[in-house]
Image (cartoon, rainbow, N blue to C red; front, side, top):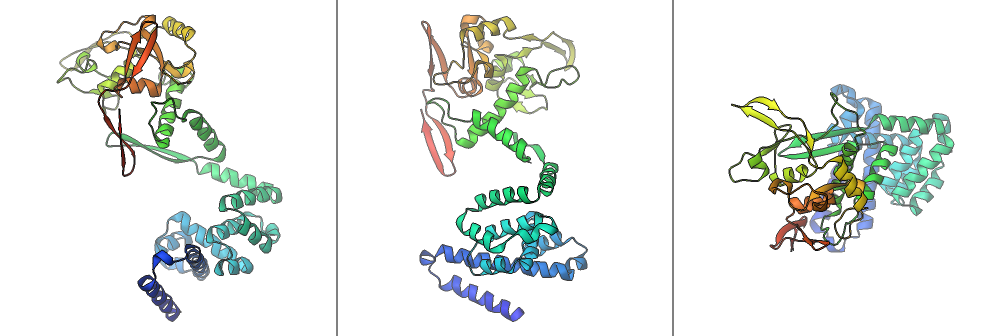
Length: 395
């Protein structure tokens, strides 16, 4: 077999050396690559049957991943395809001749793998090859899921529970940023996606965020809304909240003042602290030589009565073109509270998370003109990065 592989390697080297990629048919090239992927699957399946993985005391999946430089998921997929192609010679032929692609073949193989053994004979090869030629890979997958449910509902339900057990969410902190990674089951993922999509549309003409940034902000909005509603479980008798440690000098952004900190000690912008102070619960803490000698009672910057009055005057965020409901906003002091602004009802505006941040951290100004309020963008240009390699100057 080494001779055949040497001929294949020589042919590939010749192709790379002499081919003009401007004139290579990508469809034909993809069919050749997919056919070789099918060959690899069958080779790995034969190696598994021989027990090659036992020589290194590994599982078949771990051995295939290490040997071929694959991820565990990719290795598991190759082993499944190799095993099922042995039982479906017509599908194997369709893959090798370029009738169907590797991803479609994988869908068919996993469909057969997931059926009970007594039902696998119902996986009619010609029928599935026909579907693979007509449908996209995504639609072929949906078809396989529906057919599996009709043929083997117990196995389908078991698969749903297995997927549910794979769920996880990791939140890590690095260089002042939080990194999220995770997997959700079908229902949970659909619920989160629906909530995020409802909050991630563009808000008004001043919204220059990318779709990814809007989705990130939507997730933060969901978290803030859940905390503000007061329905989350309490810990030690206290509602979940963001704790910020600051000083009067830091709150006023005085030169030389110590940085404000989150509860974990991470420094935070004074502009952000000023925004949080608009509607925060404030506690006075007195220290002597770094020792706390007195802690005052927490008081709201905006009283519940004032908040009810604000809700009576407004139905949504006060920013132009924003339709965020009033319950998804927080009170904003037209003259910043940290700068001595009064907490009087006429001097308060309800702003959503995006527009509240735009006013404090984004350099926008809110100016009262008679009975109206104008939102004025920053006077100087601000460089914003839109996507990789593209920059935009925004007024």
